[in-house]
Image 1 (tube, rainbow, N blue to C red):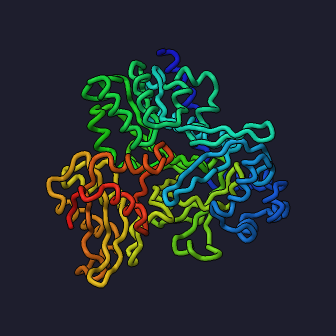
Image 2: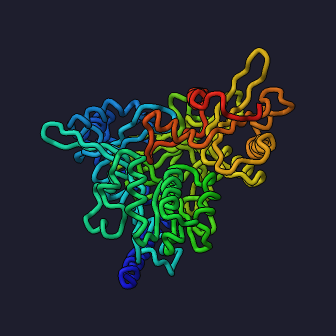
Image 3: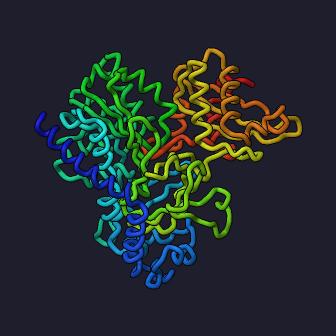
Length: 511
């Protein structure tokens, strides 16, 4: 195993030179991909509609092709799922990544081409390992197995052809080469199970006796698995089960609320954590520095990037910026054109550049996942940092949370209502709410202005929920699984009311 580890680590480090190339020539790489994508799209139904055969420049592309969201592409995708081809992309589309989003109960089906799998998702996975090996010269990761928290997939037969949909992670697992089964756990049949409670149990039982050196998954579901493993083994910490575990590759949701819980379960100074930005639509970013938590924007994965300043977002014809036009410190909505046939697609995420040489970003929230009831414009980034501050000051640990506005009434001003499930509750919930409030004021000047003397916003209402509330809510909505997330912020009270209705009169808060 030592020889295998050395050889694989060396191969991973070799790829790092390619990463350095696009870091050095970012605009040239993006321009090259733009030309390749337009060329591939010319013969498609979408390309003929917008005259791709006469598009030669980015400016022509921006003038001619509209900014679109999923609803625009949905009719094309529905036809693709029935077996039609050459609608959005010029090669066969047989896979669809099922995504629930965080603001809708309906599933989205994102087309995944063979090019997207090879040039984007698989290359992203390889680069994640390359960067890790480059930053950790003494890694022993390849001396054991990798544990991946996969999703599930379905098969539909149309005209004697199979078409597939499922979580992106399931699509990746399904298409891995046969040799990958020898370096990962659990086995494919378990990884692709679709009933999550049974799946967690099976994963725990079948992996505890393996030499797991690395884990890949969403923090919330990985915690569920790790806790079940400790229950089964009777051990006090994960290193007692897997002494050679050295890294957790995580993504999907912010790691900030979960960092303390992982530190408690894995009390090891040699444990590493590495964030990725991998969505159904593409693999966008990787944490590339040991001393920084921002993400290197990956520029050679078959994706052409544009960025919309937030003040342009609600306009019929929003102004967009290319990579060469962005600045640090501003929030932008992410707009992508991909090698799976998504053209000027508004993914729904917002990012902020922390560096432009090379281009590094932080995910700051969702275009539709925020609270802006009275002009306060609280985004995910504000919420995550404020929660982290309140937990530190109050010596608390949270499991999950969501928040929504309480609108003006005849008797009271507006407020924000926070539903929080604690693993370790604060001694004083009122002080926690006060600390959360002060942290938000320090992070968001609009929120601070609206909170001035309680004139517009009164203090936040923090509700402490019973254990497993969010798990039960997701289960009730048939949304257990890696692609489903608790919506952090909502600008309406739909989710909050549903959750409060489930808890009944038993919850406690700071009324």
